[in-house]
Image (cartoon, rainbow, N blue to C red; front, top):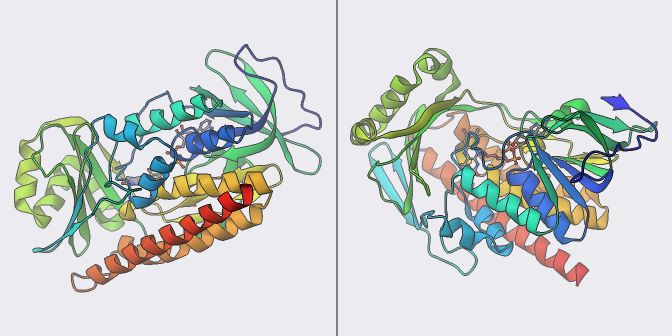
Length: 398
Ligand SMILES: Cc1cc2nc3c(=O)[nH]c(=O)nc-3n(C[C@H](O)[C@H](O)[C@H](O)COP(=O)(O)OP(=O)(O)OC[C@H]3O[C@@H](n4cnc5c(N)ncnc54)[C@H](O)[C@@H]3O)c2cc1C
């Protein structure tokens, strides 16, 4: 990190100004959504991402109600379904051999769930940010943060493709740069709560796997799980296991480990997966414990996984990234960042607590349905409380 008093920005090419009201590092679920919302408020926003526009990232991207209603509110849901993303109208939980199918009746704000590939979802968000007036630069990396004598962030150093490092001044730096946030690292942002459990995952897409295209399927037996998620382009299948199982061999032969887990859960599913055509590489995630970071300080804020990460078992990361983009946009409008932290933590805690048990495999087939019931109750309560927040905020600005 550099520390510069005045930090006059250099002239850095025709598309980058020397000052923005807000600079956002990371332009995916959290960053592009925040850029769009702040640009819609009339702020001058620059968002950068070191990855290429439309590139993939590791996620099973099953969207839950929260994410769908955000996309609807933002006017982006038609584009998601228009890309060929199936409407998910059912969730099927299989506990051992017991199947529990739950319908998802359409409502005006949530016609169904959806799992658009990140190569579809992230560009929709980036295009919406651009259409709202934000500048978004891909393949552009944060390399330094400038602070004044009081420690307040006043600018960033960024590296555009093929160019020298450039300085850009800003009133607010937002780190939307994921779990391993460079913004959080460079500013030495403290972790305010650390989880204690994590699950490992192995996942792959299959182009011709025959499944119900309108259902998410989740399967469980003690110590293992799996998911079958129809997307706009192939079916995403993941196998979940304890970190111990992953470390003690699964990671060395992920293909065999995936089939092994699926076979223990449902031999027919394992056989179909073995017959299906894989799309792209098999990928794995060793498991990382959930955590909350302090989400704001002088001249900076964090949003998305950079500020709050949880195990993927609840498939709620993107929903939370969208929710926190809206909460942060409210904070930028009102200046009340303490409320941003308070609401983020209050709304997140019940889901985080129950997820700790699920991701830690602290259950058997008798107790897991009860934990899922708690999870669903936490999601519903969170959705209701957040809707009230949005209504109150709309009344304030009306
Ligand atoms: C295995 C797995 C499965 C998951 N499944 C689901 C699911 O089914 N449903 C769900 O809702 N969520 C799921 N998640 C969680 C979800 O993927 C995340 O919550 C979500 O991607 C967070 O979005 P984000 O924008 O905060 O961060 P990210 O998507 O991580 O984006 C951060 C961006 O910051 C950029 N960046 C980082 N450093 C720099 C830098 N120095 N300069 C410029 N750019 C930088 C990166 O290139 C990246 O594009 C899953 C996660 C994992 C790991």
